[in-house]
Image (cartoon, rainbow, N blue to C red; front, side):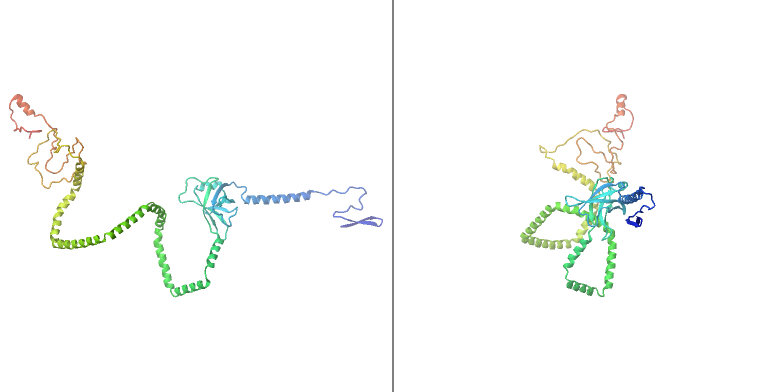
Length: 426
């Protein structure tokens, strides 16, 4: 703004952004002071806005949230894996990727910042995959609980190994490009034309093929668990075959030796086969002429074989008891060695109760191993054979009180006595 000031028609032009002093102001008065409040308020407003923006960004990046560090070691982090990527468990976000570093051995160390409240939900042996939402989407870290979770929980500073990393789309394109470079367009066109000609008019059969395949897969699906178990057991079976490989190779070598022996002895083998054929012819004549007699013999042997089968346990026990006798050394002096002793008498046989029975019942008895140990006696097996020397439970030699009375007092009338009586009179 231009102001003109002067005295007596003379004047000068004054340029300035503020109002010039009034021409009516008294001479010698001080100029007015400028205020600093408005610049300070503006500066404070800018500072507060910048501080609010910084705090919002810091809070958005989780600066005020307590986190627990966990490290994931992977062969590669892959493209589109950046700090701030999400860490998910069952589809829920439980943390973020803090940083990505290279290790000396060429692997990638992915530093995770997890929510401390979520650690109690994560087992220590959790599996880690680096996956992407889409083919071109950003990657994130996915935690997968194993089938047999560990009772220990994930702890701060623990190192996990990544199981797999999603294949990059550029890798797919590179592989596809390398495949397309090897394909001749003319041959591809010829191949597609041949396929079209082969499939022309066969849509119904092709549909039936897919329908049958679907039914076959539906029947196969219940056995997938067993198939998976068999595939897992294949490793152990392969290891077992690997351990037995030397023996198998030796068996094959022995088979070669046997084959060579057969070749060397082929003349003798031919003679043996011819003799066997002659023997078979003679045997056929003998068996054919006597088949009725052999049939009758077999029929007559049925009761004997049935009885032998019923007593096979006792017969086996007896034969087993003869084995030690057959193996023991001979006696120093030729002859028969007999050990005898005196035992208390048992109840005498009585007529007609103790007569032997024909076709008695009792079954095979072999409750003790043979031979018996020295100075031992087998228990008496009570069976329906017509005699039981222990039926009266006698105690051995008993005092004949009647004979003592006759000696002291003379003959006494009574039942007739047997001088060889042992035990109770009868």
